[in-house]
Image (cartoon, rainbow over all chains, first blue to last red; front, top):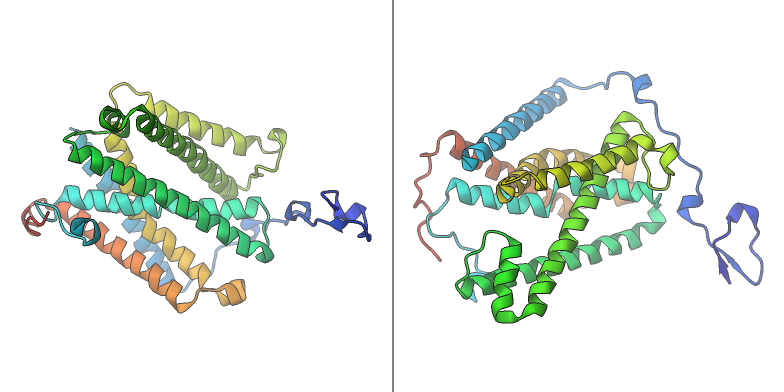
Length: 72
Length: 252
C-alpha cells in the first residue's frame, strides 16, 4: 500500500511503500541579494547589457507609438 | 491546399501591418511570460532533476493540446472566411459559424474562447506575481497560506482585476490592445531568451542537462529572426515609405 504520510515520521515496512514527495523537502534558503554586492562584469558584458536595455526601451516606445497611431 | 503548406506573402507585400501581425504571432506563441511561468511553476512544485522526464512530458502534452486548439481555431476561421463572413473578433466568428455549422459548433468555439480567457488570466497573472515576488524577495508560492504570502496573493488578484478592468473599459479597442501586447511580447522576447540561453549553456549549473548544439541552434535562430523582425518593424514605423507596399507582390 502506498501512503502520503510524512516519510520522516515512518519507516518503510514490508506491507507498504513510502512516497517521498518534493513538497516534503526542506525549503531552500534564499541568497540575500543585497549582501552579494554589485556583480563583477567585464566591459563587453556591461556594454552588451546597456545595449539590450536601450533596445528594450526603444522597442517598447516604438510599439506604444505604433499602437496609438493605429488606434487613431 | 498548396497555400496551407507553402508559406507566401499576402497581397500588398511586406507592410508595417504584416510585420506587426507576424511579430504578434511569434510573440504570443513563444511568449516571454511563459519562460518565467515555467521556471516558477517548477520551483513552486519543488520538482527535482529526477522529475524532469515527467515535467517535460507535462509540457509536451500541454503544447500538443494548445497547438491542436490553435489549429482548430484557424480552420474554423478559414471556414468562416470561405463562407463569406467578415469578422473582427472570435465571438463574432462563433456566431457566424453557428449559422452554417449549427449551435453545437458555435458553443464549442465559445467554450474554447472561455477556456483561453481563463487560462490567460490565471497563468499570466500568476507568472507576474511569481516574478515580482521573486524580485522583491517576498514569500511567493501557491503552497503557502494567504497569511504567509499576502503580497504575492494580493498582486495575483490585482493583476486579474487589472486585466478584467481593461476589458470592461467602454469602447476600448480590444483587438488592437491584444495585438499590441502580443507585439510587445515579441520584441521583448529576444532579450529574455538571451539570458535563458546563457543559463542553459552553463555546464557548472546544469551539468549533463546543459544545452545540446541543436538546442542552441534553434534558440539562436529564434533570437536572430525576432531581432530582424523587430528591426524591420522599427524601420517601417520610423520611415513608413522605406518599403514599397507592393515589395513582396501579390502571391495569394
